[in-house]
Image (cartoon, rainbow, N blue to C red; front, side):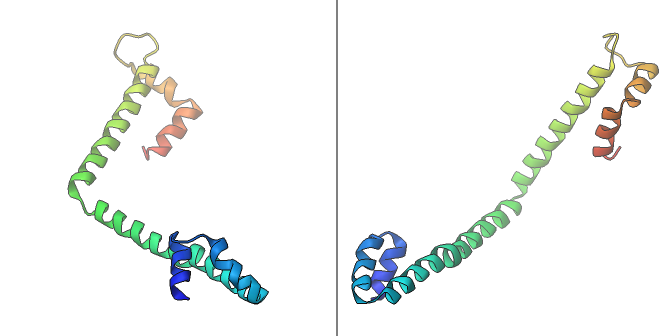
Length: 120
């Protein structure tokens, strides 16, 4: 019955309990039941979960406070990486970066790639 099908996909009854009587009637009914379970789990239920996740993402994206927090954390990470670059470029550890030290760093392929990734 439809109640058995619903209980099978919602965890109300074990599949074995539902499929055993079908197997006694015909193997075709067993296969039909297995197709139903496959379709429900991988088709319909995944669509429902996907819709729920998409709605949750839209709600989170429309929250201005979380957008500001995200932008702030991105900016802090960016500043941290840039400060690290300048500390590494300060070879003589004076706390200041000379033009020569800066140019030497810019000649390194890794640094050039890093600045390209930052669109600088």
